[in-house]
Length: 214
Ligand code: CDP
Image 1 (cartoon, rainbow, N blue to C red):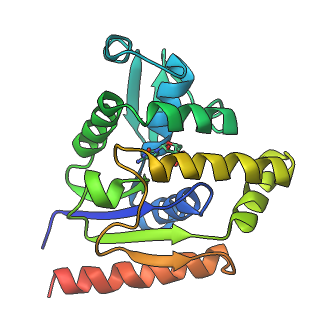
Image 2 (image 1 turned 45 degrees about the horizontal axis):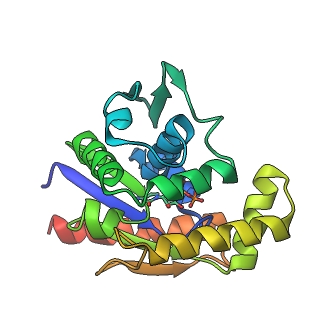
């Protein structure tokens, strides 16, 4: 039996990645590593254009609880980093190779023995190309904007424009662009309930687990 089981979830903005990862964490005991949250934290702390030196000196700590708690200057950043402004800052710092190296190392070091779910843009392609199960989530831009609008109460049209811009930037950048990783299972969540999405992935995990241990 393997002592590590890794599920990666990649996909564009608001496609359901973190909802799915949180459910796998809560119900099935996977530890959730949210790589987007790391990019968001770097953007939040250092702005659009950080230097390597600033990153090396960043006062960032993590705690392994039911989720990975990211702390900047000793404070949990979760409530500050979820705005679309931070999303765009994240997308900008994510173009820098030294920032990507930092996040990739972080994720790889955290995922030792156990069950992990890791979500972002390059988790199944670059961070864990040998993951046990790779999921690629997609949904229509309208549906994704509606979901984000429900979360933060802003206008659907404005959010639609913002996430379209960010997706374009993420898909077209030179370093680690967003694409469906080799061997990933694509799931279109546009007309799916959260529960349907979760059950579909849970079945895939069970199949893969049996396959690994047979
Ligand atoms: O939640 P949402 O899908 O809107 O974004 P996120 O996963 O928190 O990621 C924020 C931004 O970080 C993305 O738009 C990407 O530019 C960047 N990112 C990345 O480049 N690679 C990752 N593995 C994760 C996030």
